[in-house]
Image (cartoon, rainbow, N blue to C red; front, side, top):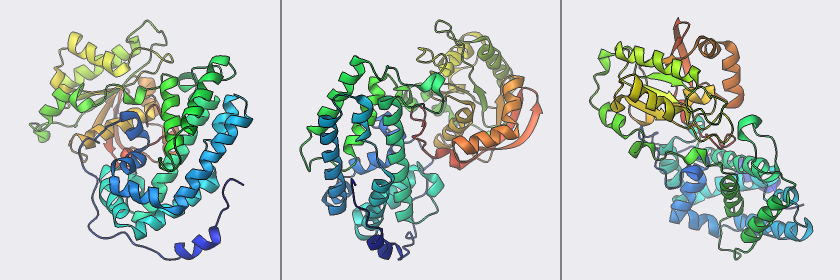
Length: 420
């Protein structure tokens, strides 16, 4: 057994209920600071630990976590000797078992109770980020444990999909870029594992090897979609953000017009006919004064590994063909599904200080709008994200639907690492 589970000893500790102190930070309505976009958007807790020298030192000094890290390093070294270059076997040593995840959860809960630096990181930095908003009302130790478990399962997912060839949630567009049985891939994985095993004992925090592996596997597979066009606040969205402060919201029925993209399924076509038609409808609504902004949403999706982002191509069309000024256009070049078209739109509405209580107008073709308005879409959101990012309030036409944003949309989802 890689680690002996000590549940009986922990059960005594867990019997004490610690209530999060009053005056905790609230979710800040401002853009999430991104130092390393792909890591921060997938594993915000791990970034927060790495960036907080006092909290990181507390975790490095903890004997339970030291033991976890040491045993995992030993297991990686053993895999390099016994797996004989087999990628699936080698990468298995970097996956977190449920037993290990629980041991770390218990240790983090204890550290939250006992260490002021860890409490400070959670009660203020982590809470203010909103990245684990579904657990915002829980005690600080429960929030920390939940955030860790999300990150651990997210790292497992990346390693399984991009290091072992497991099927992702959407295989047609998100799968591994290699044949896992090819000599090239076996050599790459062996080199990656050897580099991780060469780190000196005690120099790395307990999750470092799996985190580095997950990030390197994404890079190896050219799966950097989550980090492209970031930071949007100083790039593609800079002009629109500047104009938000001057908006008289009472003049408009909606805060923003959201336009989901449509992939062309042709590597040489920048904008599909469906995407252009949706863009034209949105421009018409904008010029009619329905909202002060259009938010075009769609990433580098169809076909797989395309060089075109749906949002960027729709923005080009709005500027060149429909006389919409750049100061009125917001982009979301990351959404890969209709569910995340809406979720990411809500994130921008909140992060950029637009009114959350004001309805949002979604414009698309009849088929997609019908799908969004259906009960099946509700089930899909709950299945894939665990919550609804919206509350539909009206269905004014076959090509439009109206919703109110929900703060739950801030929750990170590293099980969808290309758009978490």
